[in-house]
Amino acid sequence: MSMHLDAATVICARWVAPVAPDATLIYENYAVVLDSRGKIADLCAIPEATEKYSDSAIEFVHLPNHLLIPGLVNAHTHTGMTLMRGKADDEPLLTWLHNTVWPIEGKFTHRERFCHDGALLAAAEMLISGTTAFADMYWNPIEAAEAVERAGIRALLGLICIGFPSHFAKSEQEYIENGIRIAETLKDKERITLAWAPHAPYTVSDSALKQLGQLSTDMQIPLHVHLHETEDECSASAKLETTNPACHRSEHAARPLSNFDRLGLVNSRLLAAHVVHTTDEEISLLANSGANVVHCPSSNMKLASGFCRVSDMIAAGVHVALGTDSAASNNSLDMFSEMRAAALLAKNVSRDPTTVPAATALKMATLNGARALGLSDELGSIELGKQGDLVAVELGTRVHTAPVFHPLSTLVYSATREDVREVWVGGKRLVSNGKLLHLDVAELLVSAEQWMSQMTKEMSSTT
Ligand SMILES: [Zn+2]
Image (cartoon, rainbow, N blue to C red; front, side):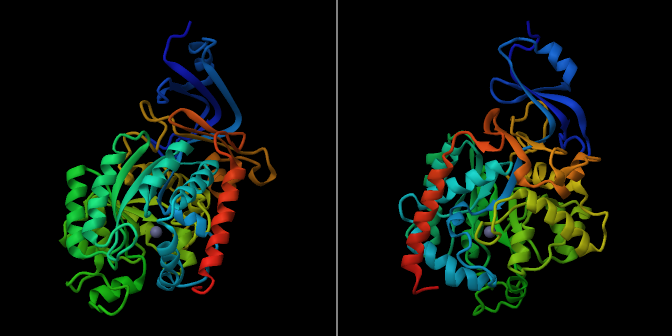
């Protein structure tokens, strides 16, 4: 007879890294108990769990060589662009956007299933890589939502606003009206939350930004935006070089972050991707306002955007999460790579090997990501009452992860996403033994191949 009638699953792991209350904490030979709603109902030593939860209806999962971590949170991506993976590499951001990304998007994103197929491919890649939630910014959140529902992953979907016409809207105002309508359509979807998503200071006007800031406050949802990604964006805006495509669309000569502050957008709902270029004053502003920075180390390195001052930000108290950015500028949706890159890069940028230790990298990839998504009460750590979004990573059984002196060190510096064995979202197992349980990989590959052929055929004159 069980003492806890609502226990549904007992996951017994060699190590558990709960991330909170302390990111360095490791429980050994511990059990995480999920209730029938998929929430974390208990945390205790394995012998205690075996005794307490002896009811035969309760599923026991034994993970004798595994580290159980909270599901990773990819706090900045563009899932539809997964279909453009490898289409154009080794170019500066604006060249890449103007010559490849935007022309393809102009032709394809409104076609039925494009955004769905990209999002489903992305969701599959993220799940088998241990990512259980992501913040998306892309053209068709309705199709992305279908993919999210089908995949079983969790998502903060962006309601896009951009200052040029597309098949989706003719004006910023129409994007905003669309967003309000989409928010209404998606409001009751399980595992889906929404953010306003003005693309960037150099593509969205002050009046639209101000309106979106107000909507973000009224609806209590994040404002997801690219900010201070390139040096050019900051300097052109400060000098108001309006002929420079990186210049913000404000009439004020100011760096975009200070303009955002003037517009009332710098607060705890701000989810600012990149924030590569910052002054000390800007870091203080980000810290004092409680804003969220999403560091995207691989994308920044690939586009040579510069070096985010992660170490200084963390020291100042800024909440720094991690993101992959899109699979077209990374070129993968692998948060293991981002954790490792973030840790290594921060040390080198600050010339301080003690900065961003493994535990901090894991916290950035989990709890800080959950906070950026506005979901830190529900996700990001293994604590009572939180969602059963869990990832088991097998350590010490393959040559590249042996021996395991410190599981967090092995996780961040030695393990790869190939070591992810089990993944649960909301208590439902979506990956087992490294395989997706509910998605047909062959079908995903066929659709990726078909879209590639179509893009190659139709874009041959453009690129
Ligand atoms: Zn981005």
